[in-house]
Length: 308
Length: 200
Image 1 (cartoon, rainbow over the protein chains, first blue to last red):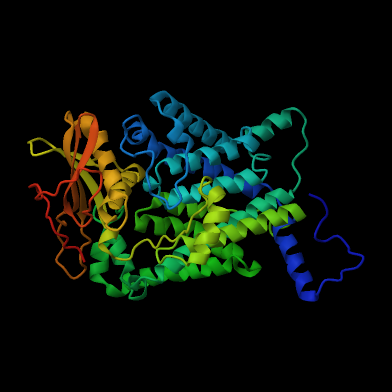
Image 2 (image 1 turned 180 degrees about the vertical axis):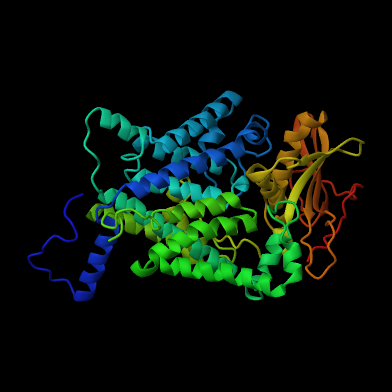
């Protein structure tokens, strides 16, 4: 990668609109960025990966082992995909692959061989999900996206064992990197895409218009984390308010991340709001995953580094 | 930067098509064809062919909690309940499996999944002839008096192994269909769950 969006140009014959679009594209994707927010995303993503992997561990053989409950040809997706975990036909091979995944998550968390660990974790996590798509939930989707974003950027150059080892060898502190910007840009784009996808799906359902969605989330007797049915029975207005607040927050979040004036505010609101929505929806890990997407844009560090 | 820009642009197009092509509302033939031919072959294995259409709830019966029960067929004994006493995301994965079996009335997924669950439970049940039930705890109506919902049984099948071959016989539920020969129709077996859905 060479050059900079701010480099002087001798002659620019592009139409003004196209030039502005090109400059905005270059500035968004390739302005060198502080790698620390990406390192924070890496550590949190590693921890999330370990938590979600733990939810597979105890039932791994029951699902995917020889004679397991999930057939290798599980048609949970429209495009069947061969998975490394489907190739693991023995119990030992299955445990070895899963152990490699857990080791990759540990390495991601602590920033050990990050340039290798992040893509390896992404590949193995995708393979595990493809082995049993029917078991995968929204938190798993978010984790896969986060891992691929980390695989693009230099997430292990700070706050990592890689940096600690490099520092002992006299390596200089890392400089802002365009690839950090690419990775952080992808994190933001996906935060908006996930929110927009969810918003569009919600607006197709009557319950998100008539204000009763919060009730139906709370009415899941087996999986709810907090029982708010008594509160919502007592106040229809409160139930409506919670429902509309979720939709309203999603609209503000998906739009607000694109504007300098609102970005940090909505991102910080997201760090609080997404886990709360996750708890209400009975999907706490999904809520935490969405909060991780908010970390870079809610970052409080040096404005000259990440935020333009 | 030019190469990276091209790669990013291609990926963003793929992301857009993945979202447009993976919605609960379906997608156009054009979008489906482009996505399936150009993007799904590499986005699918990477688990990036995602629609992100997660509405949290539509208040439908399918949005309720689900579980699985495996019993020795027409014999006494405690059923194997899944997720049972499991909690958190581990339990959520079993609920997703049960929901897929219960809600797959128009898909071809219920039969192989139910057969897989039955087969996988043979060892735990100590018998190669079991019934697999998907159970659903209906969503409580807000206007109704508070009470623990009584589970209903949207799907039930008998799974057995005869001469090394797995057979599935559907016994009841909305997802009945002819699959995995020989499939025999039978009356629903007795149990402590209701046969018909009563959820809103």
